[in-house]
Length: 531
Image (cartoon, rainbow, N blue to C red; front, top):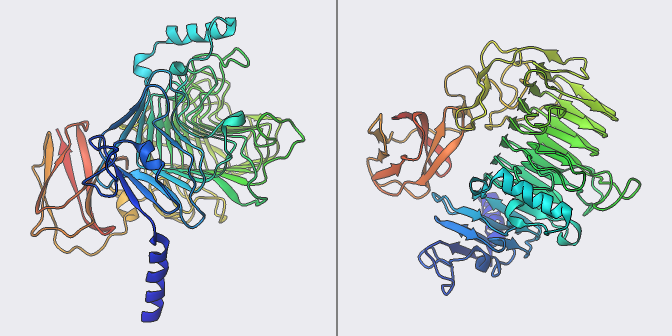
């Protein structure tokens, strides 16, 4: 056993041999070497130019802004066993902003890349519909060229035409992307892309290129595998929409929460050209009040859309159903909840071959195709809302979605949006959340460890700060997470002293869950009320 543990230790250590950690801070300097948190770099791009396979770039607190080009353009690649990682420094909340003639806040054109824990913020608040429509009209008339100010994308992997370097093996995780006039997170001419556990809202409003919250367009074959190569999982997409016509067809299009878009032929190709061989998995996503569909596949084959919840989408384009496939082959739409706005569509069926709907729950809209185990029923959400903070799309104990999903392995996600294992009952539930009887279902997903002394949390209720008192100085890797009653993590901070103060002034009033961990194991779970 000792020999086995030594082998494991050496194997894990070898992954980091020769690897370098770089630190970036809005208070740093590019004259520093960036190899310690005490002497960080100023620029994310400077750090990117230093990276080698296996390196990690830690972004510390601050706002990283651009007004003339991307804040970060990643072109250096990692390796299959040595990804290059860009992530928030533990306990920090770095923010990337872009405004003006900027086409993308972040571009990834390297392979074997992880991008994690950033907030990306666009400039919608300073753009009007009238100005955006004039820019579109001037472009149509030929009196002005395209303007990045109205088309800024949040995070773009690859790109159109010659812009893509055909990147592959990219992971986008635990980021927030909002208020971009262009798309939120997009991948064009890429392969092996995982988009996991992101919050994406208020994007695509003013662009003239028909963007969406999350999109994968024209993936390419970096190999001939037929396994899951693209995964869109555990994301929450709210109020992404288009209000400006798509310049190519001169009418409104897209503005979806999630779209898997055209993999039947390459970018700038046509039917009969090389098709994409891999499968795409879309699971455990929550898609609410988007202008187009909640989730759909268009001219995309080999797609599985499983255990998602879509609520009152089609806000701008009522013909766009909540979840559906259009002109597709080999698509499975299983175990989802589709709650349409009155007079709109739950699903749709157009020019499809071998597209299977089953074990879905529909309510309040047109059902164009109904599978053998599909039902039409009220799902009984706890608190349906188009506000991502207030929304709670878990279901009540009496919901017909509970224990009503497919019992067949592979036709349901093994964990739900919060990481809770499925099934909890005799069969998995329909939708993105698995029901657990009890007031705080998220606790079961946190792998609790035996308590070694409960920290004291005070004052409670509180307004601006909450303090955590330990009986002695906590060890390294002790952390507090503050989570809403809907399971949304809104604050994370390292706890390094006997008495730690955590700022909560920016949180909305209400009840919150506090999870304190040591080395990844849960030490304490408590609640407090923000007044």
